[in-house]
Length: 358
Image (cartoon, rainbow, N blue to C red; front, side, top):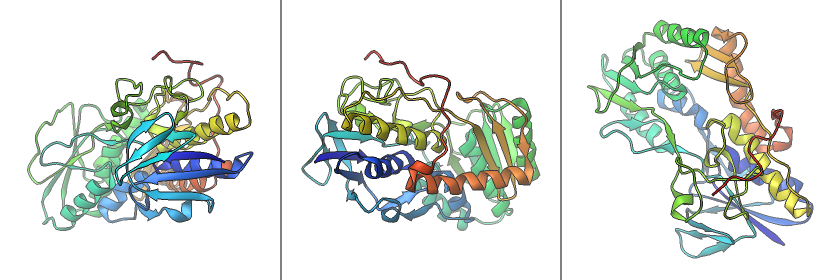
């Protein structure tokens, strides 16, 4: 019986594990290795911080009954297995590398909002903050925008400001304007064109760019400049084809998001399934459809995009956009549990070339 190890239980990892378990042409053993027994809805971490919702749910119920869960941390990946922090090795015929992404080293004295531990610590600081406390969110991407707006709406006694080089850089001018107006309506002081390299007075929140873990690099595998596993057109490692990457940890032209993680998880599983059937895996062809931004619980902005995330079409604003964003958040959990139901957007051609030079 083939043994497939999935490293990581985020959006990509859970979707890949469930798709493998459900669709394997012959009996297989699927093991998910993850350091915690919780599934973190990272797209809801700003709600956890503000106290308007939860971002954590039990992991086991999201995995199909045939999927094993191993609570441990992978310290090294090889062609035929992984090494575990808890001791020993776990042999595997194929490995799905789905470690996701997180924040890099946080600014000293600032609290990161991109991962669960940082979000929980920030929640405690916010809950204990006195009226008038300044709260500075650093980062003008979607994470910073959503954190600043959620905190301002839920905690109007705080003085929330958002500091960014550029606000919502990937959106159209109309969408950027809508985001700016939404923030200002919530009382957020928006400071564009500024750089912050030290904490401000009060509470400072680090919402700067994503980084990926160093696991692939430390394991001696070929990675790109960002540390993501370099892959061929079917998401197989260019120097270790038994390792298939999914989600943020795969070197693809798509931005890091759950919108790409889930279809890439399904695609990575599809590559393994094709090989189990003795077939040549199809080149991966997925794409983006929109960018959704929540501005608190009652406002939002939805920007349609083309496959490679270039803005197009009219922008949806206000309450309707907030409802769309909420439905998207709910759908992600359904799709990782039942990947065959996921609506993935195929592109006009392969996402990646057939091979990527090492």
